[in-house]
Image (cartoon, rainbow, N blue to C red):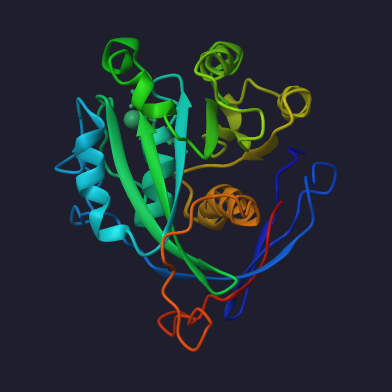
Length: 272
Ligand SMILES: Nc1nc2c(ncn2[C@@H]2O[C@H](COP(=O)(O)OP(=O)(O)OP(=O)(O)O)[C@@H](O)[C@H]2O)c(=O)[nH]1
Ligand SMILES: [Mg+2]
């Protein structure tokens, strides 16, 4: 039986159950997923399009962020071998579906989702990076600059992609990403049950050794959708708890951040 981080949906709410042995800290957060604010809708096809930022300088990004200055922005990068499903995972989180067709990411795909945690509106900015060396080498500095959290992804059906995690961690450390920056490990493609090569116990040991939570999930399986959400929400909850992260004039009403009425998703227990 594969050990997973369980995610259970209650009527009118989204509840994350904390992973028992790997709880990093216990916290209860109230959150609402306000709106699915991908920077630009691609019509649900999942095809790579205009949000594919193959930028050459940080100026491109600052332009994109001008409209977002009223909320805190958490930059989360997603890294790992090519073809492990980074694009599909980020699309599942920000777009709520599995892309019908993907191509190798070139540079970075940049997506955002607005969430509300304990009454604070937050933008989770997901940087879906290229796994192929030739598509990423000129971009690496941009990935790691001012990053708030890192998601390492491997494919549970490809032992190589798991073994290569060491290299990805080295690269991350080599770019002076602070040890205090939260990191999680994601084993993707768990729907391919008969092809699984990476045992859960092996992955769990690795995650523990690197002080990471482990999520085993599938971007493809719709039943895993909330589990995919919990990867990013877990990080967002932890980042929110780090008061030192930049505030950007959070919109307030009567001294309190107004809760969104647009969704019935509200009370949650942080999976961390
Ligand atoms: N069965 C299954 N296939 C998946 C899953 N996630 C992604 N895939 C497939 O795996 C292939 C690669 O997915 P991508 O998301 O493009 O991989 P990537 O990691 O972004 O690859 P690069 O952009 O080259 O770094 C595609 O054919 C997807 O349809 C999953 O959870 N289950
Ligand atoms: Mg990709």
